[in-house]
Amino acid sequence: MLVGYGRVSTQEQSLDIQQEELFKAGCEKIFMEKQSGACMSNRLELEKALDFVREGDTLIIFKLDRLARSLADLHKILNRLNDKGVKFKSLSDSSIDTTSPQGMLMLNILGSFAEFERGLIKERQTLGIAKAKQAGKYQGRKKSMTDKRVVQLQERWGSKADDESAKLIANEFNISRATLYRYVS
Image (cartoon, rainbow, N blue to C red; front, top):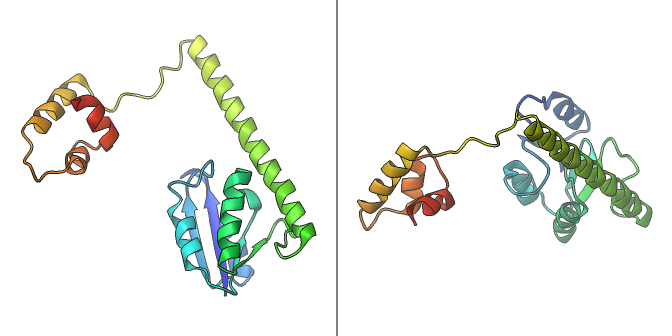
């Protein structure tokens, strides 16, 4: 079975071209998501695709950088596919064939370029933030909790029932458990 995976980094970007190309390639099942590729966490559709594929299947992507932005993540994904007996193909990078030494070489070279590109993006972002801070235009991320909400959280925490979890209270305030503990300790 041919299984497709597509990804864009932001909500404003479109998945249409990738989806169309994966469909044209004969993918019977396609997993798509709008999520940063900087790391593997929070990529639920990728995880679903990796769980879905079976021995003899081929995972197809539109372009290598849609799958991973670091060599470490790329190799983790490919090792999982290899362990399951799943082949891998990139439509835009036609020289990638994970069953041959030449294909593995090309995969590593292109994976290095994707990682390099991610590093350049991060570097430009850091420089842009530093410049904005110097100009007084960048204040950082807004705090998720106002002083009033912190007091409310602390009161709610102090009056919680024994069977109430931290996660439940954190969800009430739309914050993470780590943020909850930071404010109540």
